[in-house]
Each structure stands twice: as structure tokens, then as C-alpha cells.
Image 1 (cartoon, rainbow, N blue to C red):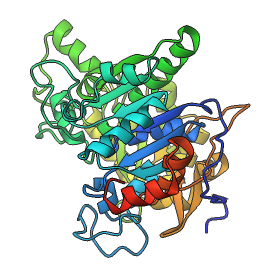
Image 2: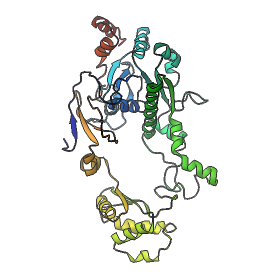
Image 3: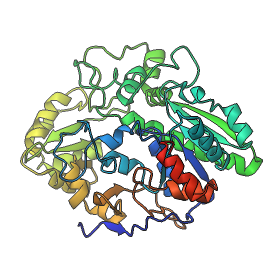
Image 4: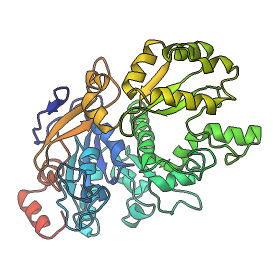
Length: 429
């Protein structure tokens, strides 16, 4: 175990939560990442988030690998998985409770309604129409709980001609225009890889939830939240939209996108450069003449630089010379030397650097460990925000499948032990 990683004791018994959101109970129908990451933030800071699952349709992150010694390649689903080993699921759902409930049954649906009535927040990120199929509309939830906050998270939102389209992170990136403006000059659009827009949309979801909670604290009124991941992506495309509408310039024109280069404000050299080692790189950003002089001083004031009067117009030439210099040094050597001279530079770090050697990450306590009864100690990334008077309440790793059925159905909903056993045998929970 890394000495710089905090290991949190894992008492799995439900307990009163600590933090600014203590007292907020969330009936969490979310799955995948776009919803689960949003409710994870609430759980980290004290909300009692009850994750609702269906044994007949396991969440995809429960079926994927990414845990120690898993022989399967990344992204390959297990036909008969251990539902408690999924690395992504355990990352998305720490600090939450977990129950199983079949909403395809009448009794399961009635239990869901009782849980909604006992909760102050309801969240979901199914395809539009799924909650309506069960009759779980905002109007119905207000009948169950007049001040309910109902947060809906989807690819396109719940209105408009495309609202029923299915989506995942890479699809959202494409539709919002982000894939079109990404990549290297004169190359096809590359996109971002993986599902980063799931996480971006999740942060908007969590912010919306906290604003709604604050509003209810001051007015006593709940609300319905409708977050569109595509519109989150459009928000990130602002500079390009302005360039097209104000300057009349098409994004896909010769020499564009700029890749790692920066046009506004002009900066040169500005890019990622090869270093000593296998696939090692460093990012360098030079904005003004002072940065330029300090970079050249670090390089030993090379003679070729005397002929360059317009750095921006001669970027290709500068990049070639700079790459020759960085190739003889490690990324961290370049970063340390340039930062000492006031030049913005950073090693392009891989997972091993972040996990094992980065002193800044270790000092901030970014990573911590939670003990998990199936996969053992599991490593997590914490909140990047530090508060002076509160801390993230990391009390438990992600719930085992149906782990908190007895607690939720007896302690919160008031069922007897016999009723829970009967419902379990009938496949309702």
C-alpha cells in the first residue's frame, strides 16, 4: 500500500451521515456514470443515497472488469460476472446504500413509491419514457412527497424532437460539436475517447441538485430538474461557436483544428513535446517575450533563436528545435527546470505517475482507500476541493448487490422481517 494513501476503516453498517447534506435522503434510480457520479458527490458530503438496482438487469459497470488481477481486457463484459467486483461500479457508488427492487412487478413499484415518499430527492438517468412507463412522473411524485426534488439526467433532455434518442458519452461529444472541433490539423475529427462527457454532465447534475436543495431550504418548495448532456457539451464549445458566428470562419478549414496550439491569445511555442523514455512527453506554454527568453536560457541560448522575430509564424521550426532539446531529458526534468525559470511546463503524467510518485498529489491527499469485502482495499479519487470546516465523509465502499435491503425495507419503510423474506423469495427485492 502506498504510504501517501489514506485507508479508511470500512464499517459497513448504515449509520447517521456527517456533512452539510446530512438529513437529505436520495432515492437514486441512476445507473452508468452520468447519474451515479452526480449522486456520489451528494453521498460524499453526507446525503443518504439509496442506490436502487434490479437483479435481472445488472448495471453495466457491475459487469466490466478493472479490478486487481482481472484477466479480461478493458471493456470486455463478463457473461456471468461477480456483481460485486466491477471496478467502475465501486468507484461510482462509494458512500451509498444499495437495495434491489424489481419495478416490473406491482409490489416492487409500490415499494418504490413508498421509498420516494420517504425521500426528499429522487434521481434517474434512464432513457426518456422509462420512468413514465412505471407511472413515476413528477406529478405522481408530488402526490407522494409534495416538496420532492426530481432530477432527470439524459442525453438530449426530456423535450424536443430528439429527446427519445439513446446516447452515451461519445455520442454526446459528437452531437454537441465537440468531436468536430477536436484533433490535429488537417486530420479527421478524433473525439476525446471514453465517456468523458458522462462525467462533465454529472458535475452539472450535482450542481443543479445542490441548487435545488438550497432553494427548498429557503422556500420549502421542490422542483423538477432536466439536465441535457448534449447541452452541457454545447457549453464547452463556446469559443468555436463565436469564431463561426462572429468571424465567419469554418472549424474544419486547412490547418485546423489547431491541436495543442493556441490562437487566442497567441502563444508560441505551445504544445506537447517528446522526452527521454518510452512514450514520455512534456507540455510547454510560452505566452510572452519574458517566457521566451527564459525558455531559451534553459536551452543554453541556442544560436538558431536569434533569427526568429515572429514566434507564432515560425512555430513549426521552433517545435522541431524544442523537441530536439526535450528528447534528451525526462518530462519531470524539463518541468522542474522550466518552472524554476517561471515558464509554464508540466510532465504528461500517466496513471503510474499519479498513483505512485507525484508529490503534489500525495501532499493533497487526492487518493484514499476503502476496504471492500470482495475485492479488498480499493483506491479512489477524492474531491479536488478542500474546505476549512468540513471534509468528505468516506464511510464505506460501494454496496454489495442488495446489501442494504433489510435496513431500508425494515428501518425506513417499516416492513417486518417476514415480509422482507417473502418478497425476497418472490423475486420482488
